[in-house]
Image (cartoon, rainbow, N blue to C red; front, side):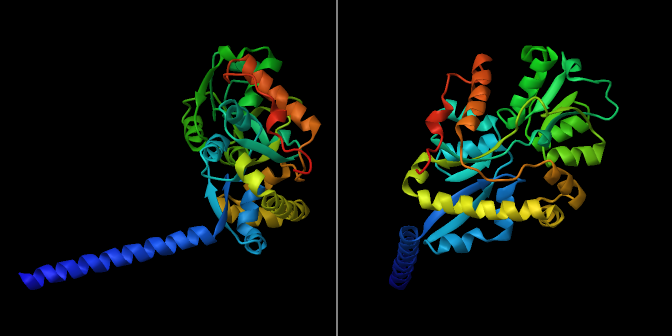
Length: 320
């Protein structure tokens, strides 16, 4: 019995030593390793940057590692930024409006030019609906708080239909695609590459895209805390994004081949989406802030956000 007890004590001591060593090693790594955590979606320049692998060596020179996390859409990405799970990411126009209204510590740091054809209101190919006005009384699937939320608002307004006169069905892209295909909804408001994929697979028709209705900007964000502590790292990420952007606009077919593998779509579908995309990573301007303020004011007027907000309060100032 004495020998058994001695062996148990020895095993416990050994286990404690192993755990302590592991904790010490982990703690040492945490102290030594600086990390930038980037949130990205299924499509866009950040996916390209991740797949090219050029950011990691750039930031390693500054002692930083890169951790990538994929999100299905903009709202959960910005929620992750809100709770401190990521430091940097990008979304369309609407998600940051909801995030700022909820008190998220976001900071606009860059944008891409308008890409109004990169989002659309789709209906099945054999749908009797012929115009946006026909959506009155119909079920419309969309991702709540995403960029297409604003497209739907403005398209309805232009067609003389009140937002309260349709039945919004809030679904993430994958679930919305399933509902759209089985006829559970009458229309689907969606962005590329899901838009291009649905068109190719189902023959979906476009009632309206953003042309003449919304700009459909893409925005890049950092958390206020991370930007304040690491402005040079944010600038390094944006510089590498610009390099990828320059390459992308010069060889769309090559980009489509690379992205297709990364996101699991066919090259022709991705190529269609890329041709509807905008190119150029640019600093935030007063004009862009003014455009984004209109989005915020529209959501507040419809009580979709709980309070009025000022976009300029969370836009990166030149030189900061």
